[in-house]
Amino acid sequence: MKLTKLGHACVRLRKDDRAIVIDPGVYTPEADALDGADAILITHEHPDHLDADRLRRAQAEHSGLRIFANRAVAEQFPDLKIQEVGHEDRFSVAGFDVQVYGDLHAAGHPDVPPVANSGFLVDGEVFHPGDSLTVPAQPVPTLLTPCDAPWLKGAEMVAYLREVAPARAYSIHDAYVSELGMEVVASWLEVEAERSGADIRVFRAGQTIDL
Image (cartoon, rainbow, N blue to C red; front, side):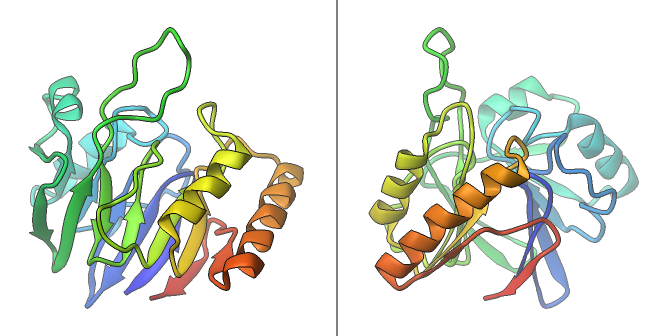
């Protein structure tokens, strides 16, 4: 399986000429982000994870394109053909096995209630938590860890890495970070990699990792 980082929190997973894309949002600038995708997984409704206009165009152009998301997303975007999924659901699409973990977005502003958020564990290998620090009820070989957000501190990122204890962890959710800031993120991840012996590092847009 090949894991490719796209803009911000978006990734593509490909195997056997089939592909799924997770969280193509408005901060995912790649025009070809959805090209060849058999399915799209959406963790939650925020536009940095869900570019509704892009999804509408994609479904109009490819009637067989399947979109999976939680009920809150499906209700907010009734014009999209969305298959609803929720915590502890399991489904297969395009040859991938997907398990759903988590219910809510991480707490952010004290006056704004958290929205629904669904993390996706693909083929028992790669976990994309969306905007959460959800810990699946099973080992996670490869964690996509948010590295910067209004709801996240660096110490929380480190605590999350230590709690999940993956063999590999790669950064996502980076559109808000300057190049200088990413150097800081990289240094923190390097320390964790040395401490744990795991492959933990910054994952930049355009990079592909074979799993």
